[in-house]
Every structure is written in C-alpha cells, then in structure tokens.
Image (tube, rainbow, N blue to C red; front, top):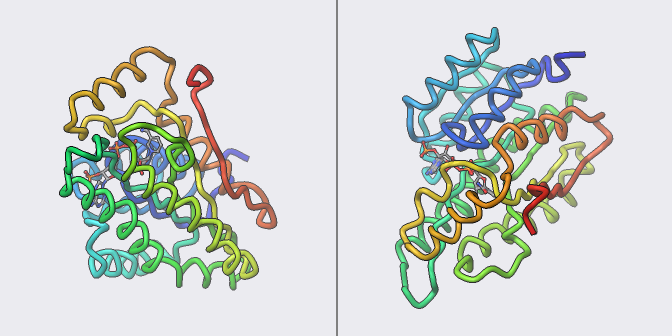
Length: 252
Ligand code: NDP
C-alpha cells in the first residue's frame, strides 16, 4: 500500500533541516501524523506547510532538546494533539570537528549537550508513550541517529565520534530492555550526507576536509535517509533492523 504508516504518530527531532526535515515529510507522505522538533520555528513551519500541502498531518514545536523540561512539555502536547507517539526519530545532532589541542572546550560541550544529553532527554520524554503503544499491540520505534563516525578512527573527530559511539552502544543496551516489551530500538549510521551539518564547523582545515569530500563524491541526500528510516519503521512488528549503515557508494 502507499500508506504503510497510517495510524502511526511520529516525532522527529532536528526536523528543521537536512535528514530530519526530509524524514518528517516522508513519514507524513506514508500516512503518519508527524510532530517536528528543532529550535528554528520558521524552518519547522516550512516543513509543516509542505506536509499540509501534500495532505498530511503535522505539528511544529520549537524546542531546544537540551532543555529537559521543554522536551517533556512537548511530549505532552504531542500526545494531546496527535495521539500517543509510536515512532521517535531521535536525530538532532551537531558536528564540530577540531584538533584536540585547539582546546575548543565550548564546542566539546555543545556536542555533548546535544548529541548525548539532548538524545537522552528525547528518550526520557517519549519512552512512556513508546512502551504504551507497544503494550497496545502497535508497532513502536526508537530510531537514533548515529554515524559511521561511531566506529571509524578519523583525525579531529574525537568528541563527535565519542558522542556517536555513545549513541550506537546505548542503542544496543536499550534493546536488551525494550525488545522484550516489543519496542524496537535502532541506530542508523550514515556516511556523508549533503546537509547543513558541516556549515557549523569553525576549524578551517576540518571544514575544508568535509567540503572536499562533499564536492568530490556523489553524496547521500537527505531523501535517502528518509526512505531508509521509513523502511525501518514499516517492516513487520516482529522485525527489528537494529543497526543500519548507509554509505554513499563512492565513499571509501
Ligand atoms: P543539519 O545540521 O541539517 O540538522 C541538524 C538538526 O538538528 C537541525 O534541524 C537543527 O535545527 C537541529 N538542532 C540543532 N541543535 C538543536 C537543539 N539544541 N535542539 C533541537 N534541535 C537542534 O544536519 P544533518 O541533517 O546532517 O544532521 C542530522 C543528524 O545526522 C545529526 O545527528 C548528525 O550528527 C547526523 N549525521 C549526519 C551526517 C552527515 O553527513 N550529514 C552523517 C552521519 C550522521 P535547529 O538549528 O533549528 O535547532
């Protein structure tokens, strides 16, 4: 069927651009009601407009996911307005690569705050809805955005890679507790995707390194990630794709 996600209620963090925006729109096309979270409200409104124009249902909530209470309040509002969430794409993240001796400690902290604490805030706020959905016999998905950086040894990626390794290993551990409750837990580990992600890098060498990579190869596009996340959520309830690496074919 063209609408395999009908009846699902999804939340996407980091949905104002890149992979999150594309995934929110794709999930809605496939029939899910979708709540979109990020800080830039104007961008979120654009995503919601696209979804509405295509006949879908969506709700924009401007939330900084590093704010635990803010995420909790959003979770309540989504439950009230869209219904119990059964699909969480826990995707907001930031990559600020730099050499360790540059001691960009503020950037270390920003990555830890978003990629670790923010990811945990989303899990904490939505887990009760996921387990309630699963207990009702419905599919329930927690899909965390990790990266190939979780396992690769890349110069200047230390803090970012550390946060992504945390997400990948956390995913394996959560599955042990949540799988038996029929909550699927997964990590998607993309290679290079053409998004705004490198725009935030302040280290000039690191940013050149990334720009060259994007320029030189036929990168993944956000739509490729959207299609993959939708597929992970649409497989039968007894099937859990747990760790999915997706690479641009030409990236070594
Ligand atoms: P983008 O920079 O386009 O997307 C990042 C998203 O996170 C934006 O929507 C941004 O919105 C949101 N965000 C940032 N800070 C916060 C915050 N404090 N609270 C809520 N939302 C926030 O890049 P991508 O789409 O590439 O990134 C998405 C995920 O994919 C990240 O976790 C990234 O690490 C991961 N990834 C990316 C790869 C790539 O090559 N691009 C490869 C592998 C993984 P706003 O600023 O409006 O808050």
